[in-house]
Length: 340
Image (cartoon, rainbow, N blue to C red):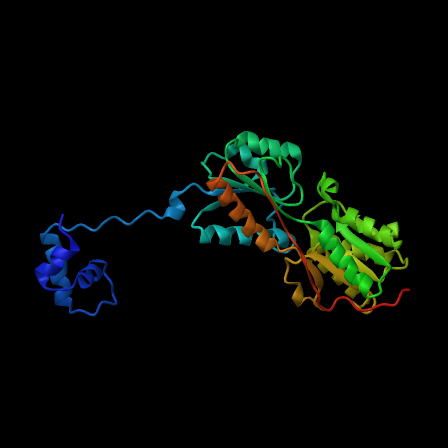
């Protein structure tokens, strides 16, 4: 088979010019008759272009991201998980690896080979065992608070103890003692790993500040902004004394609570300070901008991919856990209060 170099020698042109002409490079500045001579010569000597290389990103088996049905329901109530997803997708794109998504409810129907699994969210031990049953030899990394089968499954997480402590210490430092909790019921088994409510109760009890009547939770669900709004609205309508500060278990709940407070004419932070949790939603755009604990959900997704690829390259290494330390993002939803 003739080569570009041979065609170049035949026509007295450079190999680069021949190559660009055969690729139909429109930026190549040559006369139309010269381009025609090149194409004719290539045909005469039987030159055939190499077929395009198959995209390695598409050719390789994907990483399978396993999630619950409600995990990616919408980008407001599930802002934390969408941030995790962005980290996963960006890390996979950088490594030129496909990622596919499968609800854990549909796991039995998955047929495509996978090179690794990311389990996103909190699951019971039986669900971990079910996953391992269907993919017995596939490296797996869990991203969440709960972690089972820790001798064989890597784990990327943050600590509720760390994040709640940052939130409450900020409120304590600003003089708040009358602090309420607004959240949703957490996944079964979370208490074994330090649920947000559990850590909140323990820290408030240690200071002697706990008021059980100021702990409000909705049942577990996906419409978290609406749940935060309803919880706060009903609390206000009861007509009882309200706390001076509120810790919200996630950013969407805080958004709903702030709407209910605004409608009731209760000013944030002058009448009620608020600290939220997650750092996933653009809370800098609320009025006032919301103080929140950033647990780095985007980076959790990135680290999950990195840990999975590391395990794939070294299957014999011991299972690992990576725990990211949270950051308190101080904005304008907290003001000092003297309650001593």
